[in-house]
Image (cartoon, rainbow over all chains, first blue to last red; front, side, top):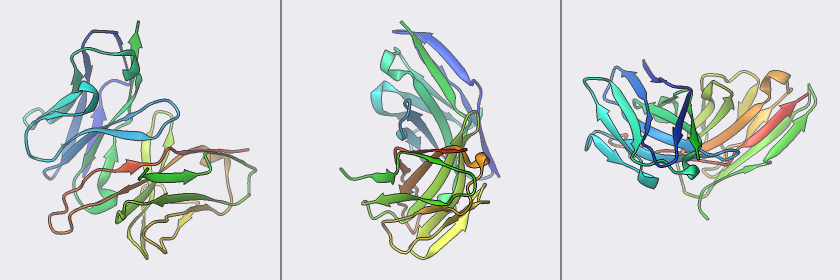
Length: 114
Length: 117
């Protein structure tokens, strides 16, 4: 069995300040982990992925995430928030088995204050 | 541009009507899936396919049918629409290494917003 828990349903930060979106996971196997972003009325776009190589993963638009096995976490960070970062973010786990092996978190809504 | 194309973008149905949501991809991906997105629920898997002629049920398959006659197309059918099927539907495709099962990540369509009244 596998699961992901996004610890915050909403996060609000000021423009120019750091962003932290938290994700914990549970898996019986060595998982692959992903962060996707969804802008309003758009589809989902892959931000970054961890697949058992380097534990610090860099993604698009200045985002990065660190895989911490001891803490079963995969938190998403960005040093300086931009207004265009306002969106819904999903942490996703994949433990194998093809297309049915994905489990999505419930999402974190990121609000950027001017 | 290469990607996943979903049609229509918006649809309103009356209870009991049927319709097909279309999904096509031009990346020669083996895997294709349908998800529904509801507020506070994340994305939930409806049906998926690992190749032409092969489909299987996901987490919430009731009320939906699929088929995969070609690699490119994966339509989702609602046989008798119900208000509980009001949602945003996403189609996605991906490829994977057949030996290592390394998974390359999904490409999502832009979604179909369906309202059943």
